[in-house]
Length: 84
Image 1 (cartoon, rainbow, N blue to C red):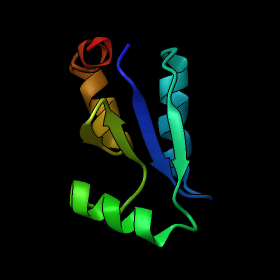
Image 2 (spheres, rainbow, N blue to C red):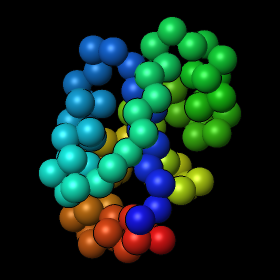
Image 3 (cartoon, helix red, strand yellow):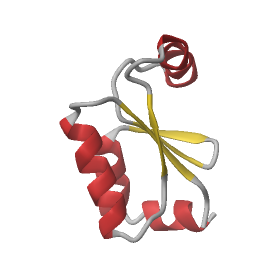
């Protein structure tokens, strides 16, 4: 299975929802809390063009946030990405 990283902050409802969605699917992921890391947050903006969290990466590809994750799953595109 392809590696999954979820960049989060504390007290983020969408972060919790994204992690729950992945857990329901049985996907292991690495959570990276960027609450107190301005350098990592700036890197996220540079890498994704977005300031919001969660930011989810499958392999090296940024797929977006929670709603993007769910949309990929609904379209049947998430599982193939996770398999690599």
